[in-house]
Image (cartoon, rainbow, N blue to C red; front, side, top):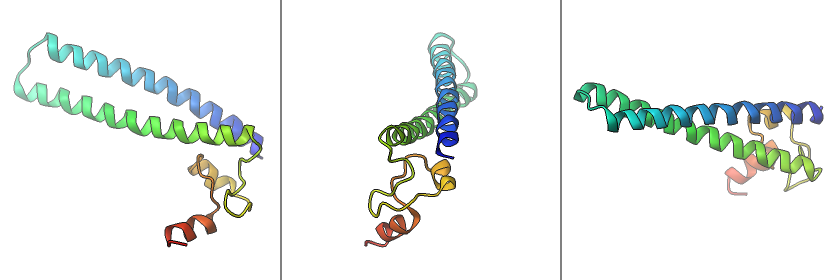
Length: 115
């Protein structure tokens, strides 16, 4: 089952990388058009809002890529799905939702509670 997850994470990584490339292209086009073509204040505000949204999406995508990379690194080391704290199993659904996690549910909960 871990092999399936690894394949899914690799596919997701490719999709996110492609989207990031597209977002960067859109961001560059918007930024360039803001400088080249003066617009009315309302149009300019809308364009700036779109650039900011694109930047937020970039940030989220980069965070997800980082988590996927951690998961793939863990897989290469034979540690995917193994809790760093107790060596217990991390459930596949948790790894899908948070691929970079290195703690099982119980250890994560204990960590949040200050334990």
